[in-house]
Amino acid sequence: MVRLSSYFSRRQTPQSEPASPKQERNHAGGYSFVLSDRARLDRFLILGSEGGSYYATERALTVENANSALTCLQKDGVGVVRKVLAISDAGRAPKNDQAIFVLALAAGLGDETTRRAALDAIPQVCRTGTHLFQFVEMVQSVRGWGRGLRRGIANWYQGHEARSLAYQLVKYRQRDGWTHTDTLR
Image (cartoon, rainbow, N blue to C red):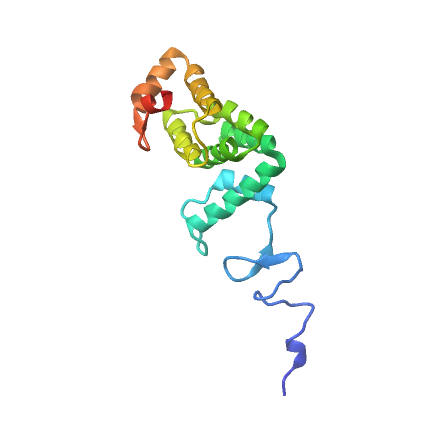
């Protein structure tokens, strides 16, 4: 005889079923509560998606996080740029790559005020020549070289003291297929 109570219980829920209507299926096949786009953006800026996870590839996680970033950029683009600046300036992330990526998305796909704020933030987020070249590589995939981008890149060079700029030019001559000559054209 089958115990019907084993199929329906309000005290115990198997992992293969949601315990709450607010839960959705996750990469592991179980159910978990969904992060808001803003919380997902914060998590991406700090932890990144490098190496993926046990259940999701790096590419899948990066695409999901980029879509969350784009949603946040549509809602409050300038706030996203401020969040990127705050996390990058405070050194809360082990790598600056995610901040540079989201800044490039903001500079390429944001509205007018968001793009302007992102381009003005280049010197604060991209502190080394390598960071600048990463930004240029990423932003070129989503937009062209307009006057605003050229001005933002020029602000990076003009924002350095002569000695610091000379150090950047000598130490980081070429990265990601870019040289300082390319960025100054």
